[in-house]
Amino acid sequence: EIVLTQSPGTLSLSPGERAILSCRASQTITNSYLAWFQQKPGQAPRLLIYAASSRASGIPDRFTGSGSGTDFTLTISRLEPEDSAVYYCQQYGSSPRMFGQGTKVEL
Amino acid sequence: VQLVESGGGLVQPGGSLRLSCVASGFTFSSYSMNWVRQAPGKGLEWVSHISSSSSTIHYADSVKGRFTISRDNAKKSLYLQMNSLRAEDTAVYYCTRLPHDYWGQGSLVTVSS
Image (tube, rainbow over all chains, first blue to last red; front, top):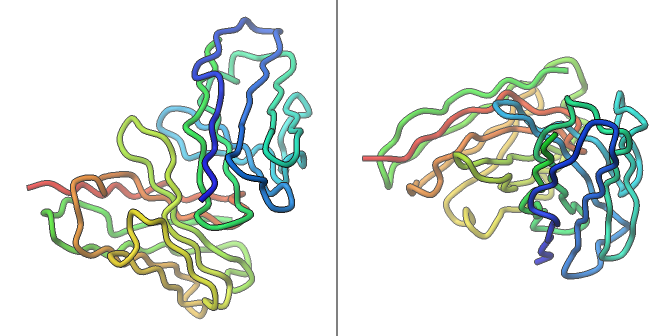
């Protein structure tokens, strides 16, 4: 199975700053089938990015996904207060479709 | 698009529960579906996958042999039959449409004596 390791565990930043979140896979992810999700307390996760770099419908262009192979990055430029959340990556190129352990972004 | 789960609740260890997810607002029979769970205060855990025609099914190792995913395209419904439940199965269970662009509100399953 492919294990995803996210770093850092917590990111403390100020509004307007840029956040860089990392997701590293233990093996190459087929076809860059890597997604990023945002989850706020008490809410279901929200899809941000799929196929490593494609923005989901309605997602602001402040959110950018990049990477391939085993190394992937989610960049949030110009942080806004509502970006405080936990962010998860998930690979869906093979089963089991593991999630990373999450990165908490605090503003 | 709406996904509405039901069937959660309190069950004793070793017991069974069946979750349902009713879909609306899209052509349910065209989409693969997944179950994802989240234990209290923990991260997301993928549970199971079923393709649009039910021809492909996968499970996480943690539930293999105990959980069964199924769907009824005529009823626009997704199911998760959970048997031999353990305390560690306690979680909010979400049904989600692939590519995870829509999620249900979640159904809480609590396994405790």
